[in-house]
Image (cartoon, rainbow, N blue to C red):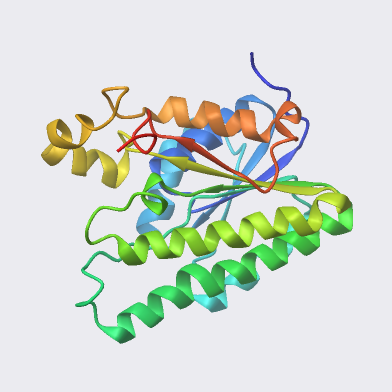
Length: 247
């Protein structure tokens, strides 16, 4: 059953990834204006190429968690009001915990946790002022079951999950709710490249026996944004084909 989505504007952080572009198209079909963030000219070009058929039914804003000065670009967007936030933004840091350079770790934490917290604060205030809002954070099954080398990635995901969970606890009485989605292996972006080299091995661990497709994850996010999913608040939902359900 398709849920009813009654909001009008959705801010999508990390708006140039495959999932974000798929979600933008799905939201536009529901009559919701997607506002996608980009962090490089390459990403901006990719976004416009993928969405050119939407004939301007979306907005784009330069906002990069890695460049704190760009976070102020959200102010005009928030002043107009948003009903939804979907957060795909995530930097990548792979390496053994004992070997990664300490300065690189500090920078990664600042970008992916501290700067994300500032965005959540901005969005929360804007939503509370309208007493309405829904935030969906796209985490990862790696937050609960990381592979070797994913320690810092998993740590950033867990910390971000905590921020969103507490925002839902603190703001639900004022009309703002949150939910976290943990997808598993997805046939998209970096995941597609990883599966191309390791698919037989990693998918053998997934009871479903395959990776998720973009359309499946987009459909799940649409449901979480729908009015019928409002009761899911300050909680984590795992969508990984059963990967983390057993040993």
